[in-house]
Image (tube, rainbow, N blue to C red; front, side, top):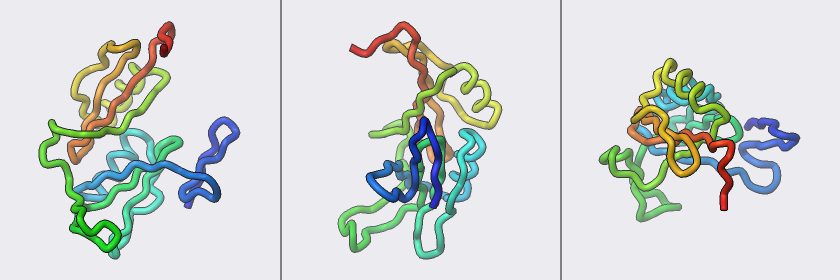
Length: 151
């Protein structure tokens, strides 16, 4: 479908060899979500899905986000129903973005319409904050402090 070059490595979706990791979100409206991830993060929509139920694919830097509307069980997941968040304040996972300059990203992404829960705050050797997407999912944005080491 597409590839991106980072530090002499090529990341592709789908991969020609090895694996590629993508994050899947159940959304209310594929076009609305694609527009959000394009506008705020500079993502590139590779596919908006189709009428047969294929998801939309969005490339954001060296990762891919799949977005699709919810639905009932299917033959490959017979006991699973996909739905958007019932309560956006009760979540079990979130996307995590690491940036080189959190203050610059905060200012830019806010100007592009991102709704931040708070301004960047210091915690655990880094500065971080969270954005809500149109379906209520949260996205952590963080920058490690220069003198912090993982240990």
